[in-house]
Image (cartoon, rainbow, N blue to C red):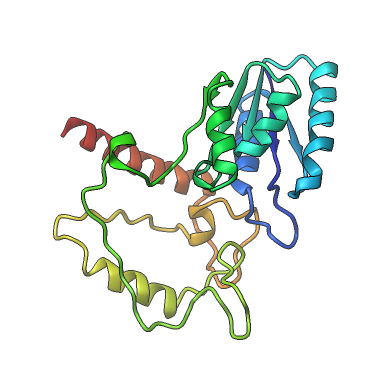
Amino acid sequence: MRVLVVMNFAPDEATPQRGRWVVDQVDALRAGGIDVDLFTFPPGKDQYLPATREIRRLIRDNEYDLVHAHYGLAGWCARLAGARPLIVTFHGTDVRHPVVGRMSRRLTKSIDLTGAAILIGPGDEAVAVINGSFSFVTDTPDFWRREHANYPSHGDRFTGEPAYFKHVTGAAERLPADARFVLIPGGNHTQFGSYGQGLQRGDNPATISREEQQSQIVDATVELLATISAG
C-alpha cells in the first residue's frame, strides 16, 4: 500500500513540537511496512496554489492508494489536486474558525472519509456529552512563559520542579474521590507527547523507551473507554 500524507505545519528548528504527531504517525506506518510519502508546505495564503500544483504532480507521477491530509485547507489543496480516495483529519480550530470553518465543513461533504476531530460544541451536535469540568488556577509563576517572553512555549521546554508539579498535584488533590491516577514509572514529559527525538529543556531522561511509555498510555486510555462504553 502506498500513501501520500499532506500537511502544512511541519516541525522545524524553531518549533520542533509543531506537527510532530503527524511525523511520528508517518514513521510508525513506515515501520509497519507501509510506503508513505510525506509532503509538507509552509503556512501562508500564498502557499496553497503552489502546494496544490505539487500535490497534483505527485499524484500524477505516483500510484497512491490513499491520500491523507491534515487540516481543512491542506485538505482542500489535496481535493483540488484530484486526490482520490482522500481522508482529511480536522483538528478543531479549522472546523470552528469563523472563516476557515465554513470551508472545512463544506469539504467534509466531498471527501471519502473524515478523520477524528476533537471539538467542543453544541450538545445536540455532539457524539458525547461532558457532564462536568474542572478548572484549577494558582498563583504559581507561569511555568511555560519566561520573563520578558510574549507567549508561552510548551513544546520545547519543561520546567518540572517546582512549578509544574506544584500545579499538577494541587489540581489532582481537588479531583473527585473516585478519580483514577495512572503512574508510569520511568516515563517523562517528553515521551508523553510527540515533542521530537530530543529531550525537552528542563525534563529528566526517561528510563523506559518512548514505545513502552506510550503503550502504557494507550492501554490505560483503552481501558477507560471500555469502562465508559460498558456504563
